[in-house]
Length: 400
Ligand SMILES: Cc1ncc(COP(=O)(O)O)c(C=O)c1O
Image (cartoon, rainbow, N blue to C red; front, side, top):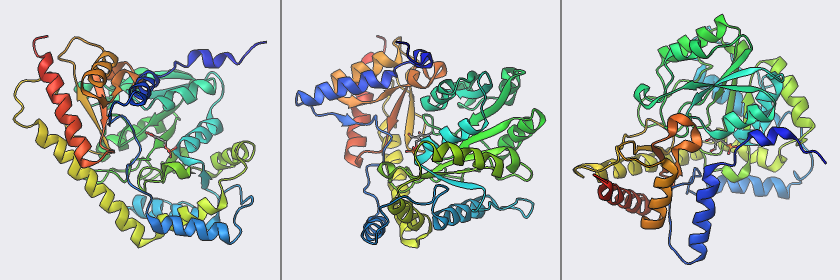
């Protein structure tokens, strides 16, 4: 019997190979420093748990509105409007028609693409990118056109590269800033020009902003924060990373009404709705001052860990790794191009010899080869131990 042949186009990720090896090593009693995971090591703020428990006790354990709890949609719209509304020319998001509650950011992205994509459409995606951005297009029978975002360009495609990648069938472009795996984000001027490019060529802009609240200096700008772009911009958002709520599976899509109408049909026919008690807790998380403070504290810890890594690399002398501090998210993209090994080999060797779990840059695209992603979603102690082990390993490779 035949299977869906689209899956033949989707590679098993090399992160799976690393994860399998990690599991085997820890089953054999080996202590692993886990710097491969993109999941906050903090507990969800307890007040959020309390709201969910109370909601369950109050009977919110049945189907809920498929578009999402109005309270949550309002909180989401308020959040976007306060972030994006830097000028009176920007129309605020209408929680009734322009917000859909989803099963986390990944589902918001899925519904966004399902709503706009037809088989055979071309979608422009920077390389490197989070692998799901590419895989989802393939699952929906679109074609990915990679836009090189080389290290020499700070992992942000030059505007020329977008133009060169354009085809007659291009329907949309996908961006994700601050980016997984590189942590970079562009200037306001760049985003404005990219939006102008999208406008000139009638393209949808799908902007995955799940790391938008995790930044270390200037606040990143949303792709929706420009006058006149709302009718073509789809914003993917999630509570996962900001509030240490990855397991709750809750996020939202903000998009023009006609996109949301399609996404709603896709959601109704796949998940029905997000669990109502989770939606109550999410509405609380988005609007409560105490939770806002807790999120700011988590960000302060990531900032401290980022500094721990930078401190450890100072005065190390010659090693085969170059460490650049990320602008946002919670990843370092370590540059190992000075040595003659693939990023997968590097990760395997560091895991075997130094016991540190990392993700090969090649998992994120061709431009990621030679780089390794290191998360700082582990304790300060593990982050410090991990980077020291990596630097020691890198020193041993000099000249090798
Ligand atoms: C860029 C990006 N978008 C979306 C997600 C998924 O977010 P969620 O847990 O809300 O589905 C991730 C998770 O790693 C991510 O890195």
